[in-house]
Length: 107
Length: 122
Image (cartoon, each protein chain N blue to C red):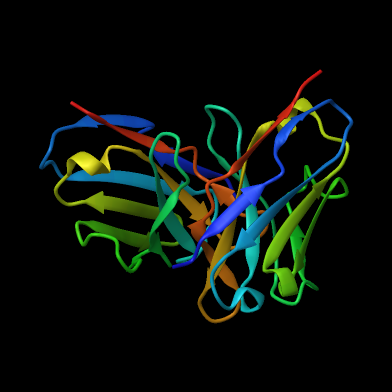
């Protein structure tokens, strides 16, 4: 199975900060990656699919990049509603695998 | 607006079976791949299974293959997960989700239901 790692596992940031979360696959997955935001007690919400395509309705401060094994999710200017846990998911081969998550907290 | 609602969770004893359901109140249910994802308490997300629109193509996580069966009833806009031989490791919130697609096959989960909690304990 493809192993997905994320770094950092958690970070503290302030409102207005630029935040970058990294996801790495144990083997190449082309652009077969999506990003999800999960707030406590809620279901995850799709942010980015196909590594860089912004889901409809998601604020443009979110962006994704990368291909192959290394991917990033960037929040250009952190807002109060962005404090959450972020997960990447590879859909390149079965079993689909999620990264362990990155928790973004308030500094 | 697409709205997925799971039901059927609860407390079960190890070795028992349970079937959970997900009803889609939106349109075009039969066109969509559908999937189940679970999240153990305080843990990350884990893909469990998904199924194509016709119900004849299914994929499973290795640790549930042979114990879990995903199915659907398009006439009822419903997705199911039959879970047998449940163990403590299956304790989790189970989410259903639609799968989005680019050319070729399913690629991402959107939207998600609110989840249903299954607790396996004696």
